[in-house]
Image (cartoon, rainbow, N blue to C red; front, side):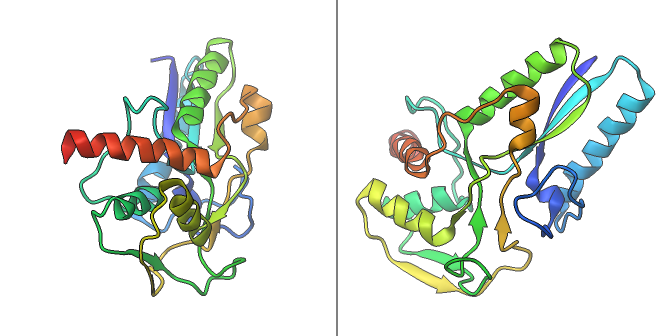
Length: 221
């Protein structure tokens, strides 16, 4: 294998010291998932240093969301933890209420802030990374996010507008290990790959996820 694209994660940053988070920020994962991705990144770096012709791009995903616009392909879990999916399942009546974990964070409304990237924009980033490596690009680590954060409360309200369902919301204590704010520094991926976001709209992201969830309800129950 001469060229490699790795699906990494923003979880390698742990709780960042500064936001937006640049690729050269300290790497301090606080959970096994982030730690495992960091180990893989380090292995790729070692391999690239040892084998002259081996090059890689590590894409650090922020919060991937949305679905194929035609609702043919999407993500399905029986008991999801992803915020947008959880909102939509609650709107569909799969859960009696939505829990917001923590309302006392140092953010604009007290809830966590996250950078949501549409899955089709993420797929485009992979295509651009392939082209970059094929044209002789050097090994690189890139954030995959829009550089725009939305709070949990903003996501909840947007999901209610999209679905037309005013479902119950319960405020709950913080969960251990949740960073108050996690937003990508996205300048590098734009500069290196020439990547641009085409679906950088929270309600659009939620709408594609909503259409997929309704289709998945028919398929999977």
